[in-house]
Image 1 (cartoon, protein in one colour):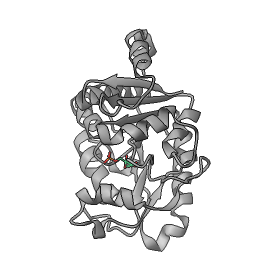
Image 2: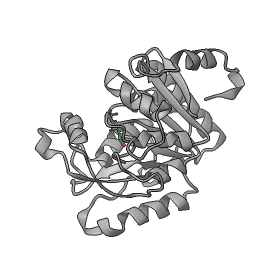
Image 3: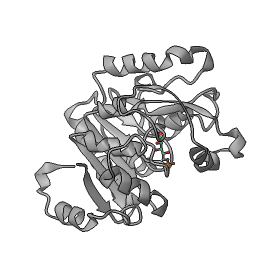
Length: 259
Ligand code: F6R
């Protein structure tokens, strides 16, 4: 099962995960990062800034999880723009090495396959950062997504569009379709790090970590992964039946193990 680490706040989560990422980069300068968008990973990207300031990150490679279909890449809320603004520019990464699925309608029939090939050509993802939707999605694999799925087009649920309306002028502006790494694509990454903060994520986190394996609970796919780490604050951990055991385990974890 996943290792669950319950932290005091987002900043502590960001520091913990950022330390793991720089350790990875120190050992492998061309490490391949799986990049999530949305609000959850921002503390990680913020914590990384001072840590990479005196490191050479010019070789680091990255693959975003998903993109909206049909959105202008120059739109401030396209995931291409978000990754550029929140990750590539502040961390000083090479934009040529950071990939985002292509949501252009003209090329969408083969965009999923193209993305899979690019990930394979990079040798796969070393560390995949994940958030989780209130409906349990990871990437944009909405309930019902196959655990074997690869990068493809999905229809966003009404709930996800409501949740993401905060980034747009109105819910009508939230695209209906997305292109997302599949659950099978995500599971192929060598280390999964799923973060979640706040009460609104508590049910989805409990379902992902402790619920039955089910395509209806896409986050539960992480239970199939041999190295999955879940970093949550107290509110997001509030529905975990084994929370005390997770605290006990982490408090007694040997320092040499890392996360
Ligand atoms: C983002 C992504 C989504 C988000 C999820 C949570 O690339 O794939 O799974 O991680 O929708 O979004 P936030 O973090 O905004 O609550």
